[in-house]
Image 1: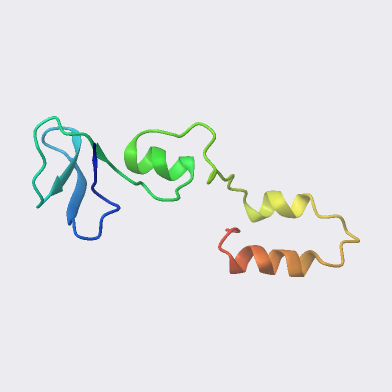
Image 2: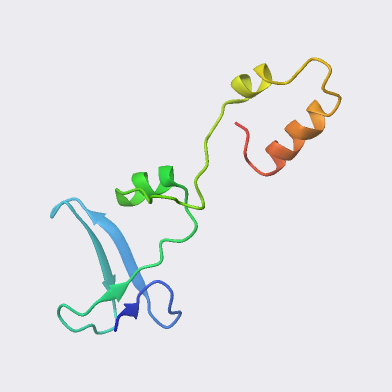
Length: 98
């Protein structure tokens, strides 16, 4: 059985890329046996963040998102859209618009 490093509150971990060894390392102050399976919870990240932070992407990631600039988005609003400002406000409030 594995030990959940990042999901167990009792365990303190330090995770970072080690420039010297060129490896991503996870250290804990708790003991783990050599070759013991451990589990890591990366949290609800989109594939862009997973790739930048950890170097991989997840197939069928439920947290995937596509980033669109406000200029691109504005091109697709129709001139008669009476709710354009409300829609833009919602996107800005949820940090979904640059």
